[in-house]
Amino acid sequence: LYQNGRGVKKDEILATIYFGQAARQGHDSAQIEYATRLLNGNGIGKNENDAAEWFQINAPRGNVVAQNRLAHLHRTGTGVPLDPPNMARWYLISKKAGLDDNVLEASLGEVDTEVATLAERMAEEWKPEL
Image 1: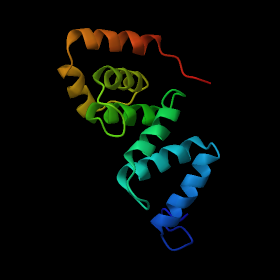
Image 2: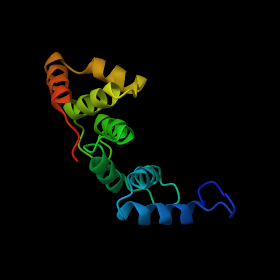
Image 3: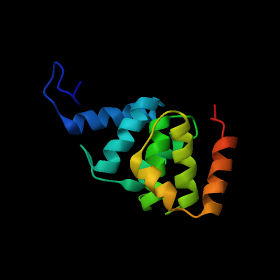
């Protein structure tokens, strides 16, 4: 409600507080929204490390958005170590699920053949955690 101002005055801070509460209670979509708000500093102080942790919780569970965002974080070393193999792995997993990304596709083309081959194998062997 507070995010979009539906029936109440729009309030990014309250929206973030409520997304954070729901995230800590285990709601997947709230975890992604909260992580995104942490990453961008929307309604809360920017905290890339905490954002990365929330994406790392959801990516292995099969959340395509978390996989894509985690690939971006590994591409830039934002909140996680700069890690081309994991960037490529998470991008290939999210791409297989239907989420194309031109920036990650270009980055994939820049990794060496050995890294790309390893990432392709890891992506093929990947199964979501339950």
